[in-house]
Amino acid sequence: MAESHGNAQGAAAHTEADGGHKAPFPPFQKDTFASQLVSLTIAFVALYLISSRLALPRVRKTIDDRQDKIEGDLAQAQKLKDESDAALKAYEAELAAARTRAQAIGNETREKLNAAADAERKALEERLSAKLADAEKTIASTRAAAMSNVRGIASDAAAAIVQQLTGVTPDSKLVDSAVEASMKG
Image (cartoon, rainbow, N blue to C red):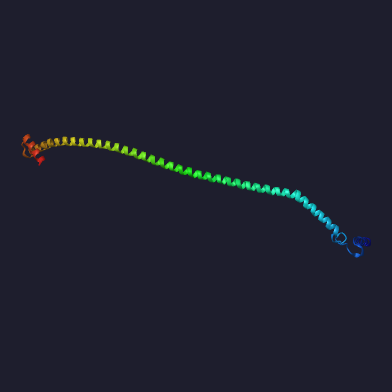
């Protein structure tokens, strides 16, 4: 065990610098500072030139392409919006025209139906007037026939009553004249 402990001390001795101090960080060493500054400047200029000549134009092109695509898409969207607005206006105009035509057709149809109904009503009134006139003639002729029969019926009834009451058969001419007088007065 003592040997392994001794080896650990020997390894620690090799990593330390002479005098027990560690070496300073290389960029901060005074001896190499100027050459490192020149190397850094050359590396920065080289990196700048490479990025400005190769990478930045590609990035700029990508950005410009993207901007052009965005502007193109916006222009196309505006064009489509304008077309849809125009289509909507045309649709609304067509709808208004269709409503106007429908209203005109409705009015025309209503007028035709009203005219047909008026004509049918007049024809019906004429038929009814003719039937009414025929009915009045029939009533008048029936009344005349009934009235002529009433006189005969009244004469026969009067003769039968007189015969029943008196027991004597009355003269038919005398009964007819009495019935005629009673009807006039």
